[in-house]
Structure formats: structure tokens, C-alpha cells
Image 1 (cartoon, one colour):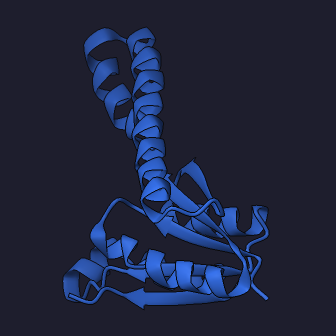
Image 2: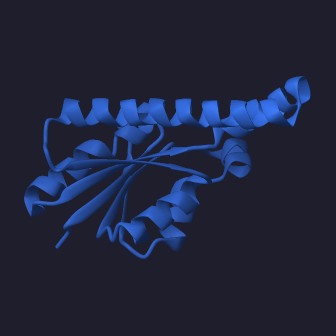
Length: 152
């Protein structure tokens, strides 16, 4: 029923709470789990300050270097998680952009059958200003979405 499961991560313990339920479902159905780390385009922030300091040529080099470093950190993070979980049925993806948009787009592009997503459970003003990635994914994803709450 679920041949491919997408687990979006952001490096937080709250997001990692989705891994165990995804793993249990994958073991039951023989599914492949795709771990997705979404980077926010860190290079653009560095490039903006480099442009002020070094001009536009410096900003292009700084942006490329910062984006490569961010992608390297994200890949290392996912590789460590895959090794820790000890199963060969795990894939890792790193993508850049708005979290909810990237999650929905990657789910569609990779033809996933289920998205297992943890929520940070923000409330009040934090939720108002930061929004809810989980809510956006539920509204726009074509695949079913399982929302996991972290147990403290």
C-alpha cells in the first residue's frame, strides 16, 4: 500500500519524532523511506552581506560557497540518520526553498504514497508569525499525510 514514504526533517528533535512511525510503517509494508532535508537558501543571506562588503562578484562566490556548505551539512545530517537507523531502504534528499512548497513538490516528484511529518506544536503568536508547515502540507499534498506529535 505504501511503497514510498517521505519524512521531511529540519534537524530538530521535534521533526525527528516522525522517523520511528515512518520506520514502523515501512517495515510493515516493505516501503522505502525518503528523508528530506529542506535548506532555506542560507547562501542568500551570506551573499547579501558579501555584496555590501565586496561588491557583486564577491556575493556570487559567497553565495555558491554558503549554499554548498549548507547542502553538505544537510547531507551529512541525513547520512548520519540513515546509518543510525540501520536499514538499506532509506534514501536521502536535500532541497532548497520554502519548506511546505518543497515538501509538497518533492512528494509529487518522487511519487510518494505517504508523508510522515512531525509538528512543532507552536501556538499563539509563534504560530501566527511562523505559520504551520504541517498545515500547509496537509492542505496541498496529493499523498496522505500522517502528523506526528513529539512525546516529551
